[in-house]
Length: 368
Image 1 (cartoon, rainbow, N blue to C red):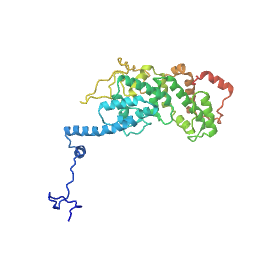
Image 2: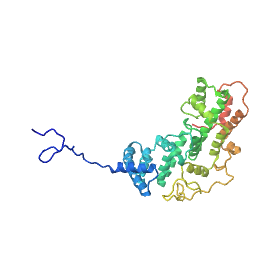
Image 3: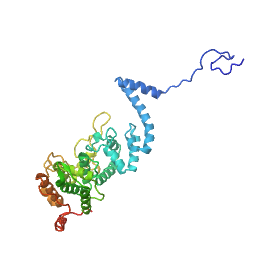
Image 4: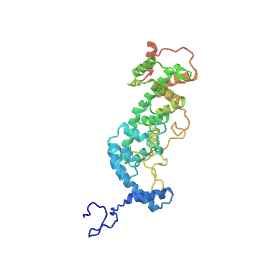
């Protein structure tokens, strides 16, 4: 009788032995070591040599993920723990298509990889920004800073930003073009002054007709291009208080050295003689602070009596504001008067008489 069909191994004579066929042996060293090291690491028992091996294993795994991500999401690829040569490749890819969406990810992604529009832009809680700066050349940092400033000038009025993040954008925008900040400040003050009489029991009462009327007037003054929604108007108006106004006014009254230092501080670059918080050597000893973007010696810090941002005071020179920005001064004076003494007169229509509008036009700059 034939022995065909049996799974048992046999002798050379074909006599079955009753033993199961031996399965091929496979060994995955990466997976084995990873499991072993992770178990030891959780107990705090890894030696330095084992730490190093574990890091190499992790990097090898990250490299595979990096190669996939670099084509679709270079910002996420930059955040992986890989060798600096790979990170520089990610930086180059990011800069090759540095659009507004990418800039937003770099500036506002927190350590949980979520967009954070509430807090200050700070390299200590912006890991992608930190990685990008640490792996960029001086020339790339210069281009990066200019693109960020340009982004800020176009987005300071975006309703998604909260007070702290917006103020940082305002500082960045002012270091490139103060007129963009002047225009935004005028927009906020115009909105606040027009909406202040329409507060009833701490609630803004804005009918669709009033919203449309405000939009028409703001467009005629060149302060907006696209119409604002009711929610946009309320959000922008609610952000206006004496403290925030004073902070923004101090920005537009500051000189270029102060604004340059503020920009560098926001982006984690060299600030005067301050210690650099970004880079440290592997030994843990801080590196000396890098030179500013242009490679020259850092500018001296502002004098103690300067109106720079080092001061805790929110005061500013009202006479300087009147001399340099008369329209902003006029709007600010009206805001102060409105918020100090509550109006008792009936609500007035927003469209002003022609003669009053003509007189105000003399003070109002052309924002178009």
